Image (cartoon, rainbow, N blue to C red; front, side, top):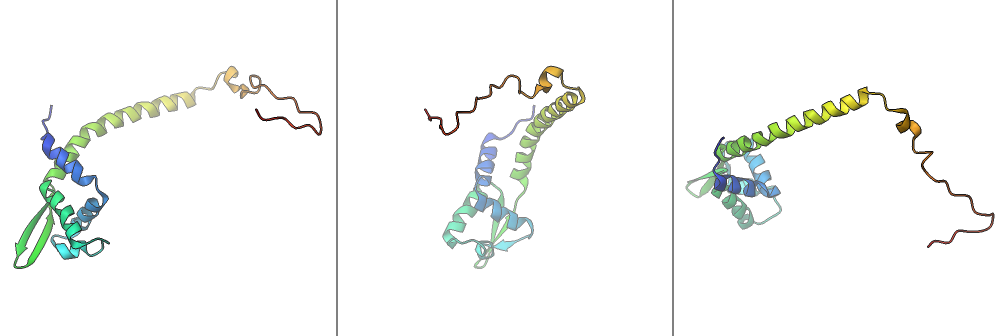
Length: 141
């Protein structure tokens, strides 16, 4: 059985749980380096708020920051994401096998013609109400 660093996985998934942090990672996936101000540009939040999100991503190991003069550049770091994908792959195999069995069962059921008892459509078992006399209305209980 593969051993995973539980603390690293916890930090990775906690960092990925926020939509703003996922959007920051998506922006970094298309470019090698972006400055903090470039990363913050499309977001309707203050620069300190973006910095807090970047701190969470950095602590999870999902980004690295390098400072050149006054400019702080951020870069995507794939290591923790790869560990999370390996962890998720175990469950993907489980769900794929379960869904394959479900699909086979459904295909088997549709290939077999239904029995005559199930074709009745429920008409014989449903009780029909008698219409009320003209001009009279039913009372709601």
